[in-house]
Length: 312
Image (cartoon, rainbow, N blue to C red; front, side, top):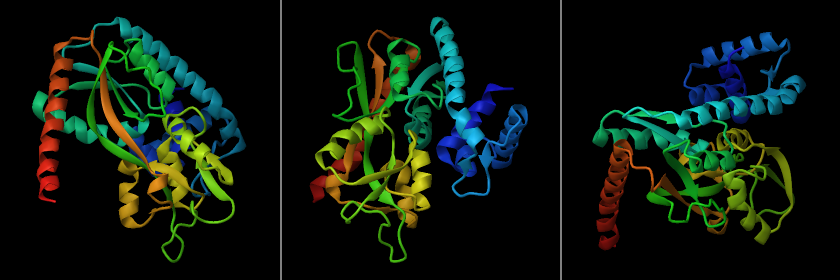
């Protein structure tokens, strides 16, 4: 049994959508379906209920999730530990990134960087690494760069002189819901009664960022589902399961199409920075080139915005 089959299964559990999972795993939907069936054959049980939408795991599949995560984390940790002692190739960059940023921000940013630096070999951390694990990999030197969100409510331990950061952009965490027949949110923060809440749990970055907001404005929440992945909660929100806070970068296409609508006013929106971190002691030429290219892009983007502001 190959490790990638467990990674496929976990990705499908997080997204609850074969198409989304296939995109995240960089395979066709038919290939992913075959790999899930291969895992089911190896286990000897049906893991996925394909008749539901979004898909649900069978009791056997649900029981397997925790063990699968542990196995994948163990093998990825072993690989990362060994690689930390190896000398990277001249143009190889080891990048740790939060899952949402890897999906929605990294691909276009990488294309812009490579236009300035030339082709890069980029190795990312495991797709299912928890936020704390991603930070630990970076602090331990297992990654050259860290691509992460930053919010005042989330302590990352990267504020001392050992690290430096470069601002790449901004994002917003928006409360969203599927629309009703009139185009209004099915689940809304200014409505009466209990709100079906799609939760990030307790340990992910977004869970920590949202905690003060939810504590300051207590309301009746029914946790309808829990998933540490934004793409998973987004899929559930689109089919009306509840209200979720989703990064605007990820939710923008669904907001434009009307598949999702904003479910709360500005007071419920969290502003986020997107930053790239590196350790000051890391001085490889390829990292310096990427860092300089990132700062140049930031300056170019700022120059495009400034005249518009002055005109107003």
